[in-house]
Image (tube, rainbow, N blue to C red):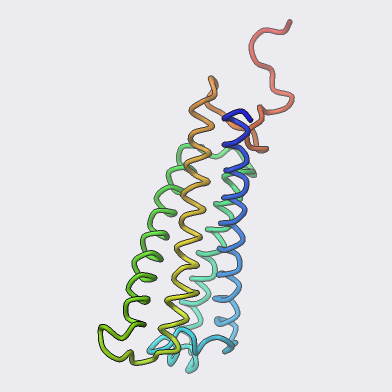
Length: 184
């Protein structure tokens, strides 16, 4: 298999994986913004209390969070199928930085949560919420970030390997119908 095809496959799988994780996370936040309470106990503490109390500020924060996550899903899809001709380097850079931050955030909290779950740091205030964070919510951010980072890096690698520096919307293939050089 050629490097370009392998990179293309990596780009597609990682970008779509990141998009799915971002979209599902956006749906959960949107559900809570709309007043839903299922799984709210899994976040625990002050966030759970605020979520149950509701109020305009909480709804706005949750709606903004859902929107930011939906934009994250669109960014991941945009790495494979840009809907317009965006500045490719900017798209890649946003993906690299965003992916690194998400992976760092998720990774640090996953490790801290797992350590706290052992009880070595003392008894947790809300063991149930701690376990959900350590084994679902925080690894979710870690996986989303790792996939987004992988997709952005694969897109950049593909672009840098091409003499014209472009990727078509169908990653890994040259744009159909574009004339390159003088007609033959």
